[in-house]
Image (cartoon, rainbow, N blue to C red):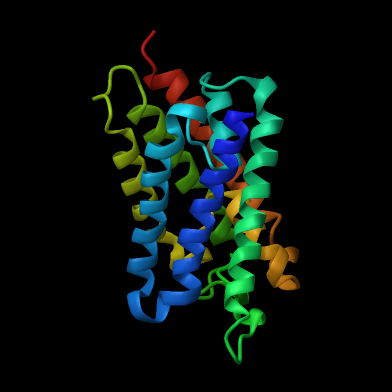
Amino acid sequence: MKKLLAEFLGTFWLVFGGCGSAIFAAYNIGFVGVSIAFGLTVLSGAYAFGHISGGHFNPAVSVGLLCGGRFKASELAGYVIAQVLGAIAAGGALYLIASGKAGFDISAGFATNGYGEHSPNGYSMLSALIAETLLTAFFLIVIMGATDKRAPQGFAPIAIGLALTLIHLISIPVTNTSVNPARSTGVALFQGGWALSELWLFWVAPIIGGAIGGIIYKTFLEKE
């Protein structure tokens, strides 16, 4: 239960901090600031909860670590449920705060992910699939490399947080950046409409990417 609570809280922190920066402060900090905010949530969350649950905060990371031989299949369902519930709780908290401002319009986006006409810069569904799959695969490679026993100890959260920052710098213009099905679900449920109709992509692509990244590291980079 401590592991599941850690995953719930860590995912809540990621969605509340990352999506919250996009909802409340993007007009001041821009997409660079939002990218940094997402990186900081993972960095701080990993230090706070990583020693308890491993600090996944992301179903794609859990699947990737499973495929990479770093996670037990028996724990996968519990982790994913805790992550999704944490993301939904964060989405609810953000909605309550945002709706307290006159003129709030949730249809404007609510930090949701999308493609085509709902991509920030109009990128197609294929572009979104490629970006989300590729970036999640590399995210898993960074995570597994940074947490490898051969890597410098104690610095993994920094590398992982910076990797997530870079991922957002690359892909916010494409999809508003998911690489995390829980993060996408947590805000899409409150935005509704088109966000829910496009949510499938932000489950399929990150999960496939995470699995690919985990398999690549285990097969070609893990010490035998």
